[in-house]
Length: 305
Image (cartoon, rainbow, N blue to C red; front, side, top):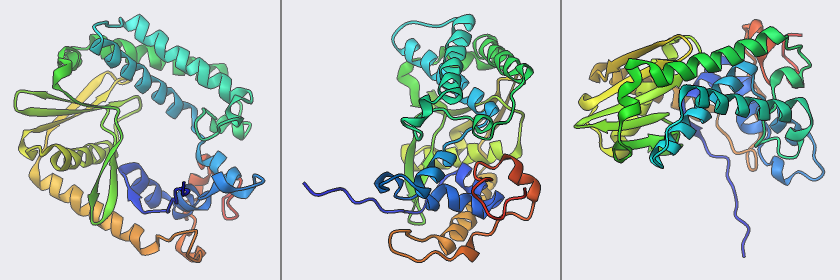
């Protein structure tokens, strides 16, 4: 049987676009420098870069635990069982404990691309008890708000037959490029499609941009009418929901921004297996303060020390 050949293809998502805009050097490390690490014998530079690529910060890890716990809530609801707020919280906490054990010990080393490995542990940054307690408090606050807030009641009451997406990564082609989308939750209420995104941090303008990219995905994959889509950013830790109907003008602006972003990426995209690296295409960000929390700061020759 012939061995499957992988090719480093250009793909786009809102998070990848943000990374590219933040620092092209970071994007190079993340998308190109570790390409082919799985073939490296013995393990070397590419494997090391892959390890750093998969680092996550404590706040991002806590948010991921909350997302997975909520996904589990939906799965149980589909089976006819519903977790209470304390049970949802315990589910998130157990995921947190499991990931912490992997990261603090050496459990992440067996499968670093599929395990939890905290940035703080990799760089030996002390994590005071106050930070872990804050993470636990956040998980509790998010659990209670998700299961008790009247703003989220339509989500909790939505019948599984109406569900369209649940933390499912999917893609479609735009400008010949694979566009990734992972709506946290989407369901139909009559003729209206509701797309939800769970947030454990504070509101940012980028959140609405990302939600609009999910609306474009819904139009492409489900033939949704843009005028019948409502977007919801649920800030679970803040205790509020921002809901906005899709506006055609704003949706067009988002698509224009996507187009510009994809074309910028196309200009420097290359196949590490076949093309020469032009390092001048991947400058480090001139905003040196960004280096402090970059996953690749110990590998980047231009990182602020």
